[in-house]
Length: 442
Image (cartoon, rainbow, N blue to C red):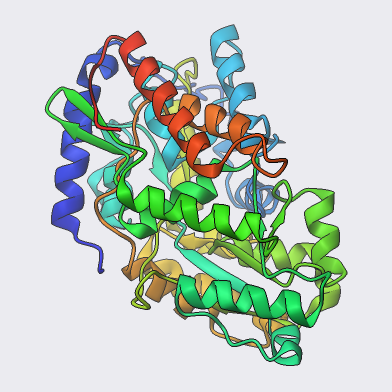
């Protein structure tokens, strides 16, 4: 299913209405910036974790005299980065620019943690970016972040071991299960992939791909259904894989997960476009052994959700919004910014600025993937992203609850379906707690 700008626009417009009550009291910013009138560069601080960020900051500082960026690497969002940002905003000592993924942006907006960057996020900037990405960062009629990348799903696999075990690259989820059975039969210690108990966003991307629609804004009401038929199908599928010991259950990017990849115990990774850089940086000794394929789908036709995807937002406490947005814009919309990130050798970002994707492709050394045109795989996947998904203002609550419950799945303490139901119940309760109108469809 190809992405439809018109349908996406309707969903985002509804989200804007449903968020209006909260954004009205959110951080508006004071639209002022450090003047730098003394001739010295304006110094801004930037918190992020994406691969290649330090190299981008270094390149910007080397080529700009009006702004100096001080970079601090923080843990990834779900690993503590978001908590650090939230605590800093509450304490009044937040940086001038932060990385926030699309799913979490409405949460920060609803909490009044960010400021509207509309005065600096001009039409000239917006028109360079994927319209859907701009829409995902526009809530309540205001601009809250500069989109950086899109993150269509992809399947990474050890082509040498697939060949050795006689496993074909799966096109459907039924094929994936058969492939998983064949891998286990060929090597009782090997598995085709991993269920990440610490990362609900991977499951959410699977649900998105299947056609689920967890949040549906209707006027000033949020319709919530995280337990619809599509989600149930995905939950039952993964529960079956776990019950039959066809996949691993390791925390994402943990030593256990990494070691399993290194020793051939795990020979596939269901990730996103940015995962290509992760594998390349993590497993340099396996150069030439990996390949990238489209995500398996339920009917064999191209389909994708989005797994993550980064934006750059300005906390409400910053007095240097114009300088922060100038730097964010440079990172997202200039050839120099994209090249600096990709040439770090650790990033495979898929830019939201479509015109810069050829730059990213050229800058990425694809030798690790045997010279495969991985950016064409990403392009095709991006074109198949389902258009009807919206993120709500309580993603943090949803994810925290699901993460806690997912952690019990591998030991048999609960099921994937029950964990998703718990996330649904916590989401509805939190929305009501915040005074929002809710239609509980779960």
